[in-house]
Image 1 (cartoon, rainbow, N blue to C red):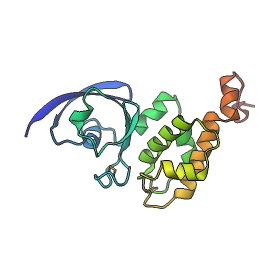
Image 2 (image 1 turned 45 degrees about the vertical axis):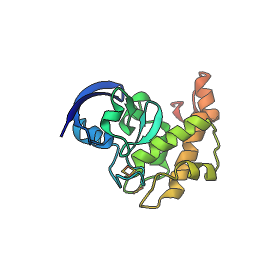
Image 3 (image 1 turned 90 degrees about the vertical axis):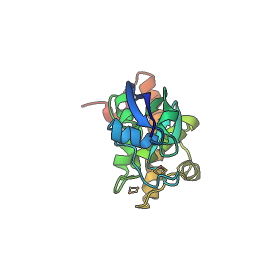
Length: 178
Ligand code: FES
Ligand code: FES
C-alpha cells in the first residue's frame, strides 16, 4: 500500500499528514485530523453528510481522495464559527428553527446551504429554490420543513435589512442592548 505526504489547509490551519492512496478525504479529515463535523453516511455520494468546501466549492468529501485535495483550502462546519467569531447565521437559525433532530445531516446541510446563500445573495429565496439547492443532502429524520425555514431565516439575516443596517454601522434591533 503506498503512502503519500499531503498538505491540507483546514479552517485556516495548514497541516501535513500521511495518507494511503485510497484514503478518502472525509476519512483524512475525521480520522487523521480530528475534524468530526463532516459525517460519514453512505460513502457513495448519495447523502451529503460529508459535505465540506474545497477551494471554495462544496464537495462531498467521500467522493474525493485525500491525495486529490493535496494543497487545497478546506472549510468544514467547524470553520464557520471561527470565521464569524461567533456562530454563522445558518448555525444560529438551524438552532432557532429546530432545523436539526439527530443532527447527522446538519453539518453537510449547512455547508450546502451556505454555498447556495452566498451564490444567490437573495434575502428571500423561495421554498422551491432552497429545496432544489439541498436536494443532494438527505435528512433521515425528514426535518425538511424546519431546515427550509432555517435557510430562509439565515438568508434574511445575511442579506436582508438587518444585514444592511449592520453594514451601515447601524445596530440590529435585537442586539442593541438595553
Ligand atoms: Fe458522502 Fe454520503 S457520506 S455523500
Ligand atoms: Fe437527523 Fe437530518 S436531523 S438526519
